[in-house]
Image (cartoon, rainbow, N blue to C red; front, side):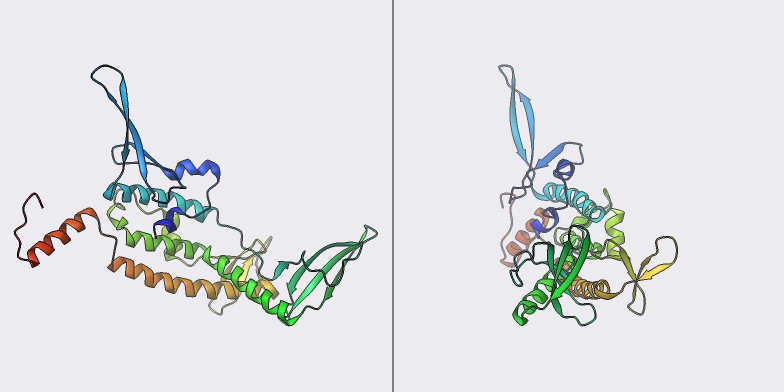
Length: 292
């Protein structure tokens, strides 16, 4: 899980320093190269030399200091991700630029594979602009093999969309929180409210049409109207929301199980390791000295 919490890719260039530069409890700033697979936190100090001048020394954070810096960085990373989630992709309108059948007409402007909201069948949608003035849309059938491939592609997009919902993001955070014993640091720096809210409160679900929808007790989706009231989700948008929600719920169950495993089997801290060594000596009947 070490790559899961610092590997989220929401940050723009200007946010990199905010995430990968973190202070310790004494106010010393540590930095980490986001491309470093080891996740090493370092800082440089200058010490006076006997013959004058200064010598720079590179320090490396270890043990619980490194864990605390990771916790702080994860708080910034996940808060940023929740504030700027990726826009969901449309799983039911897929690029068809490579499709050569039927041949392109002179006035064609674009073509996509689209799912018919009434029948659930896939077809090729071709858009043309006759004489540069009259827009026309026509549909063409596709092969069964192509339709099967498109359905599989749409399911992959739905899974990707579901993995980027606020609740899924917060669930990934919780796994790392349990795995690395971050609760030790939460008294000094509380978990950001945005993460807590996403983990504990039902969140609206954003669709690829740009609107956020709320699911009611009957499983119906609505979004606020432009001026008043609410508008229901219909057609492909409704199907997209239903499938995304189902994928999200399955993922949340899996991640909740992973979080419990992480809670029961956290990554050992330095003090944990000392305790384990002491226990092994005691079980073996060996008197442990300071040297051990």
